[in-house]
Image 1: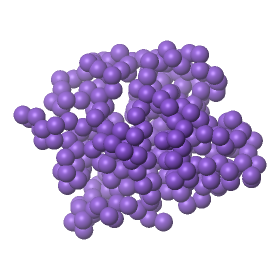
Image 2: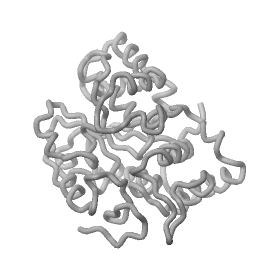
Image 3: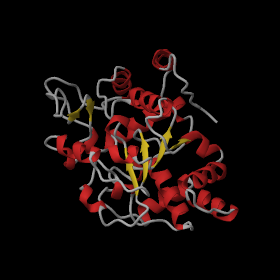
Image 4: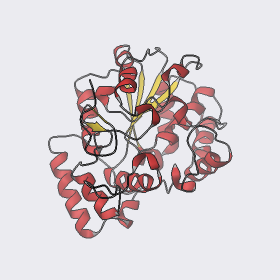
Length: 301
C-alpha cells in the first residue's frame, strides 16, 4: 500500500493524514507497514487513542501500576509510540512493554490483535478534544503548515480550524468521528478481544475508581493506598510539573511553553471557545455522525 498523491503538505496513508514525523517522511509506507507487521509479545500493553485525549496521563498511570509504586518515569510515552520511533528499539525493552499509538484501528499491529494482547482505549468528548487539538497543533511544527498556493494556513484561526475539522479536511488519524466509530465497530464485532475502555471525563470525576478498574484489567495488585497515591501523583498539576522537571526524551516538552503536552486538562473548556452558532453547528454534526451509534460523551462535570 502506498501514499496517495498529496494535496496537503502532510503524509497520507490509506486515506488518513499523518503528522510530519521523521519516521513517516518522505513516505509513510515503510513505517506503517512495520507497525502492522510488528512482532507483539503477549505481555505487551498498547494505549490507543485519538490525539489529545489523555495518552500521557494514562501512560503514567499504567506504568505506576505496573511498577507498584508512584514514582514518575523519566521517559515520555513517546519511547514506545509506534509511529514516531524506530521499532527496532523496542526489541530490548523490558516486559511488559507499554506502547502507544494514535493510528486508526485498521492499522494496528496484526499480531497484537490476533494474540489478544491488552489494549487500553482512551476516549474524550469531541468538543474538548477539538479545543485541545487546536491548541496543540498551533505550537507543534509537525502538525501545522503555512499558507500554500492551494491551502490556507493550518490550523489557522479557531474558526477556520473548527470548520476544517467538521469537514474532515485535514483528517489527521482519520479525524475524530471515524476514529471512534471504527473502534466502536471493532468492539461490537469482536475484532478486538481484549480492550479496556477509559473515558477521560470519568478519570477526572473518579480517579481512584477508574485507576482501580484499570489495575484489575492489567491484573496487577493495587491496594487503596497505592490507588490514592497514583491518583494524587497523576493529578494534572503534578503531572505537568513532573513533565518539565523530570522527563527526558525526544519530544521537547516545553516547545511553545509548558502547554506543549499539558495545557489545561479540564472538562468543559470547550464552552470558552465555541460560540453559540458553532455549538449549534457542531451539535448538528454530532447528531449526523453518531446516528445509529451507541457512543455517549460527557461534556461537563
